[in-house]
Length: 61
Image (cartoon, rainbow, N blue to C red):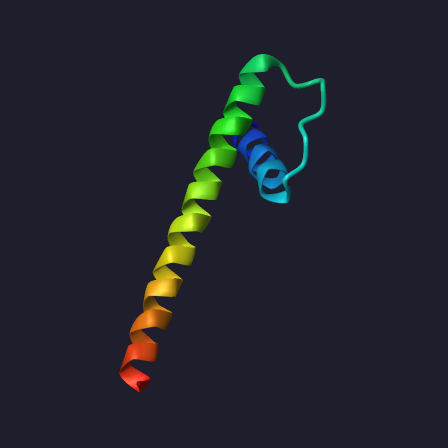
């Protein structure tokens, strides 16, 4: 049950959807924490990819 809850939160956060009003305040806090964590994770991956591309472009030049 707990894993399915976190999967729903992750799916909603990844899709950028708004939580239904049925979620309590505790669930909303968890959603925002998960959304923030996912945003940071994606941002970090993007920065790593940009560094790799920058290094490759320097090697080609």
